Amino acid sequence: MGSTNFAVVFAGRLVEGANVAQVQANFCQLFKVDAAKVAPMFSGKPVTIKKGVDEATAKKYQQALLQAGALCQIVDLAATTASPAAPVPPPAASPSVPALDASLAAPGALLTEAQPVAPLQVDTSHLSMGAVGETLVEPGPVAEFRADLSALSMAEVGAQLVAPSRVEVLQIDVSALTMAEPGVVLKEPEPVAPAQIDTSKISLA
Image 1: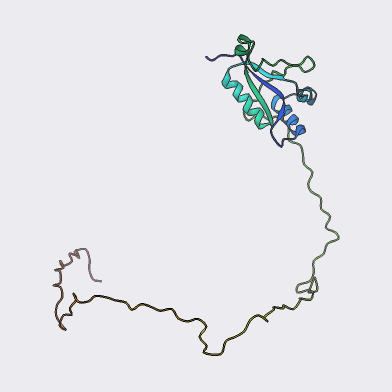
Image 2: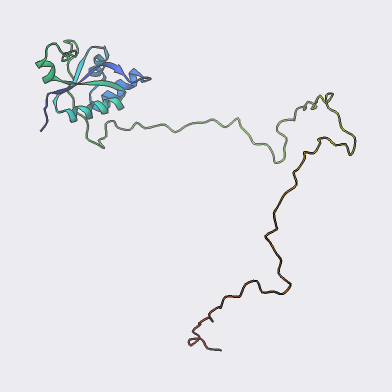
């Protein structure tokens, strides 16, 4: 069994673009606590979310909190205690902000009861439909298309617009070819085996 000296610490850092109010609401749902207990945790001072767990469990908490919008740190308490000069001292909760030390809800647990949503009320009493074939909007004038053709001209009928490029005469060596006399068999036909068809089960009506 792995060491259970790991702690998950939150110091108020959020995922980029996350809304503080939404992340606090996520905390309330995730840990099943009220807003009064969650709000002080966002003061920027380190707060221990969970301690005394192994590294795998700490990473699960870290991932769950990441999905809620919070950036948490995993601290090895044994390592920081054994090495006082370590660059990351074991964070302690501020006296005014108690450690939450909460647990995660089971998969599929209903964290919040669904709130009823009132049906959308749209007033259409002032709307009406036009009769079939009725013109709803009179067409507006369309500006005449004007194209400047002053720089263009047309050639005379039959004028050569582009001089043809020179095409090289195709040179094919046929000196090694001969033609057979009319009626000469150029290749003996291959024998074809007669078809073997079983007609024993066929009868005429």
